[in-house]
Image (cartoon, rainbow, N blue to C red; front, top):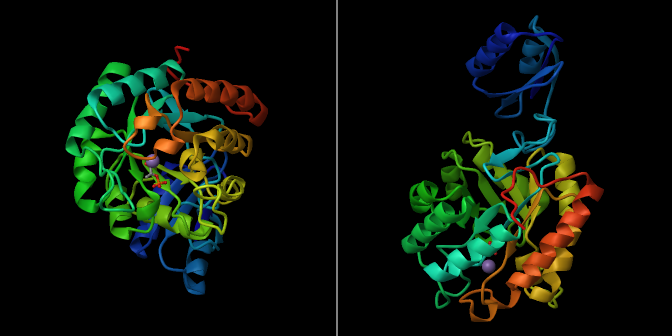
Amino acid sequence: MLIILKHGAGQAEIASIVAEVERVGYRPHVSEGESTTLIGAIGKGPTPELLEHFRALPEVAEVIPISKPYKLASLEVQPKPSVISWPTGSTGGNAFMVAAGPCGVESREQILTAARFVKRHGAQMLRGGAFKPRTSPYSYQGMGREGLDLLVEARAETGLPVVTEVLSPEQVELVAEHADMLQIGARNAQNFALLQAVGETNKPVMLKRGMSMTLEEFLMSAEYVLSRGNLKVILVERGIRTFERATRFTLDVSAVPLLKSWTHLPVWIDPSHAAGKRDYVIPLALAGVAVGADGIIVETHPEPEKALSDAAQQLHEHEFALLMKKVRAILPAVGKEMVGGLELA
Ligand code: PEP
Ligand code: MN
């Protein structure tokens, strides 16, 4: 339920309601606005008696049961967009971010070359999988720990924060020690133990939509992270399974405005895994920007043809540079900007 405090409620009133929420076995989530303070009380659906109990308290203006199954993710609990920041940029609200790099970390030279050029063209974060979740156990599985060390080296040289995937709860501590954002892949989007484990960290989490997940299920997965106390979650639409085979997945662009009407969490687009072929990556990325995404994550490789995974969809450097130019041209039309970047281009 959502508890709206009376106008002008101060810290003492907030503390008293928070204590009462905890006393009745719910988890409080305070959102202080300019004129009103909202306290989300997260737990099982409240009984009519409990709603009445809170309505009767002198500090309370109104109590509203939260209608959605996701609570902490909902705009009802936090009406303002969440903004997540790194030294190189922010995402959410009017802040737009670009994360780019190869599908997987393959060698020192490959990741450093990619890090240098994505930075040169204005990306604010480096991507690269050290542990790769492959459909086939015989496909390239990533460099593992060594890949994490190379990402750290690339960050030290370029200043770009790094995002990389974590595959299991046992890996969370190791990956969180190295990465600036933890990626949960589409194939793990309903691995609830993993979602809870990343929810125990203080690192932002980039959650991909599962390929056959509804948007509500997607938000429930985010809720697993949020409910463990980690409120920094980015939702990524990366294409879903449909009957269409001409693209690898079908990019659900409508997911962006829909999610943004339900949640305060930043929403990104991953055009690379949806397209599956580099020719379609730029137009899909631009569609994402145009529908109001708060960021994009794009695959680009110094020598895409030689990539050990996802070779067909990784952009060449010149294509990535063109994409950045086009993204910058569209951003003002949707009222967004790339802030705090290291932009050198
Ligand atoms: C990736 O980003 O490298 C990846 C494997 O993506 P997804 O989980 O969306 O397939
Ligand atoms: Mn990939």
